[in-house]
Length: 239
Image (tube, rainbow, N blue to C red; front, side, top):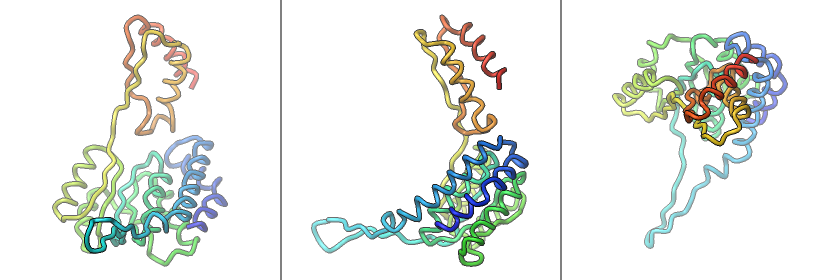
C-alpha cells in the first residue's frame, strides 16, 4: 500500500492531466486529489493492523472478543466527479482488510479507472486483487448477483442508489451507499455580505461545481437578500 502511495506521487502530473481531460477539474485540484489518495494509502498502511486487531469484550462470563474478517470481493460503483479519490477511499481500507476489489467506474472516466488498476499492479499487489471492469450501468445488477461478489458500495445519485440497493437486497449482500444531497448555507442579518458571498461562491464552484458537498442552496434573510444576491453574482462572475 505504501508502494501504491509512492506510485501515485511519482505519476501525479500524469494523473492530474488525465482527470482534467476526462472530468474537467483544473490541474491544481487534480494534483491535490492525487496527494489525498496517496495520503489515504499511507494512513491505512500505518493503521490497518491496529484497526483490525481482535478486541476483547468483558461480558462477565466466558471469554468474548470482537474480530474483523474480510468479506471477500467488494464491488464499487463509483462516480466521475472525484475519479481517483472516490476509488481510493474505498480501495485502500478494503484491500488492507484482506478483501479483493472490482471497480465499475463512471463511463466517462475510463482512463482514470484503468490507471487506478495500473497503480495497484505496479505497486506489487497480487494479480487480479484489484480489477477494473468497463461495463455499462445496466450490467451492474448481474455483477451484484454474481456469487463471487460479497458486497457492493456505491457513491452516486439517489436513483442509482435505489437500483443498487434493490439488487443487493435481493441477493442478501451487504451494501454501503452514499447518495446525493443539497447542502444549505444560511445567511443571517448581521453578516459581512461581501465575505459571505465570497465564501458561498467558492463553495458552489469547488471541484468545478461538481461536489456532493458544494453549496447548492442559500437561505438568506430578507434584510440582506438583495445585497447578498448582487455580491454573489459579482463573485461568481469572477470565476
